[in-house]
Image (cartoon, rainbow, N blue to C red; front, side, top):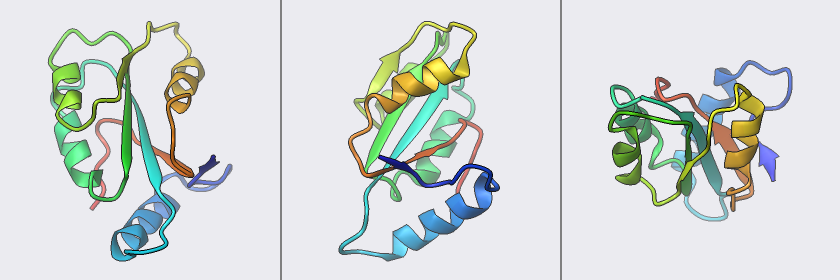
Length: 116
């Protein structure tokens, strides 16, 4: 599996460019998994997922202990919502999400990110 954004690149510029390009391609397109780590993101999660759901084939959400409606909102977009106890280590949570990726490429967004 490959990341859409290469190490050392600006995070958003190549990602947004690629997703916009992907929306316009119909056949022969590499498929993308979206991975997210969330916690108490009920205010922003739906807006983020609405902005990207047509550009990705798979959405994977790892919840690190939400006490609001975050999980319920996430389940409206994907069945791939996983609990992961927060260990004060973003890389551990990210790796937990990546274990569930089934597509050739993956991308990462925070719940307050929006693609337009």
